[in-house]
Amino acid sequence: MRATKKDLVFLLILILFCALLCIPVFSGTNAAGETVSVYRSGALIASYPLDRDTVFTISDSVDLTVQIENGTVRVLHSACAGQDCVHMPPIANAGQSILCAPQQILLRITGSSGAPDAVVS
Amino acid sequence: MKNAAKTITRFSVCLALILALNYLESLVFALIPLPIPGCKLGVSNAVLLYLIGRREIKSAYLLAILRSLFHFLLFGGALGAAFSLCGGLFSVTAMALTSSLTDRGYSFISISLFGSVCFQIGQMLPAVILYDFGVLYLLPWLLLAGLIAGGVLGILQNLLFERIKTADQSA
Image 1 (cartoon, rainbow over the protein chains, first blue to last red):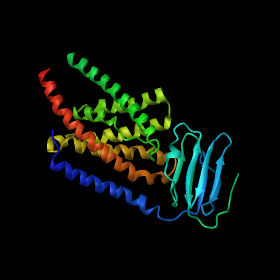
Image 2: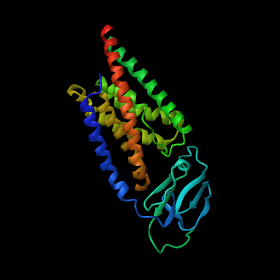
Image 3: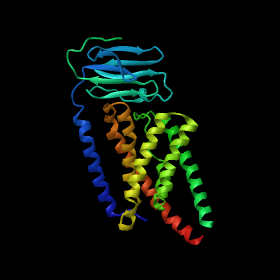
Image 4: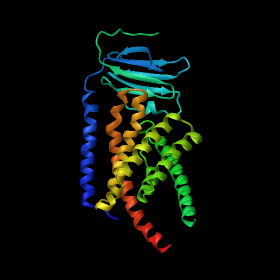
């Protein structure tokens, strides 16, 4: 069996379909982020502003070190086995997230103004 | 009876192959620091595509479920198994719906492309439902990887079926 012209047409239609799927992804993340919120098991535990370079660690039966630099957020170190969160690219726009599933930590960037400098509970 | 024995043997070989490919894929992609966490390229879907090519749709579904189950039992990681299961079921459904394309002038490339894209979409769904819409920013990269993987697997499947047809006829 060989590739046919119909396969090429199918591929082009599929590329168009994928591009349409990606539109909401690109249109929703243009706003620059202002704060990064840290959620643990769904509950907000801390918020940090993005305009201040800092490195913070989430501890207490969790081990995750996060760096804020030049308005971007990335995970420097994690105790999880997969290290997926460490390999995720830095995030900077409102709505973007980094997830450490084994430790149930979610870092989410929001663009709300007037947020407190730091909230630690 | 002879056909039943052949079918069971073929399914068993497919199961062993898909588990081996799944494990190999997770090993290889653990070494390469790709910014695509937990989600896979879908190389082991080649075995599902083979069963779809033989029009054994139920076997393909069963294999997709067993792949996730065995991977969870052998290596742990409920989340990875959930991604794999959801992606696998989406992929098999997509390929089953397009399986008759080969009778209409398309080759396995089309079926494989659609299956791979749906595999990536299926993988993202548990992540979005369980956690956050924010993880969707990885979707464009996953879809691109899916298209590339799907194309390659489709080409390989085309080559495979030429040879299998000859082998089946001479058996």
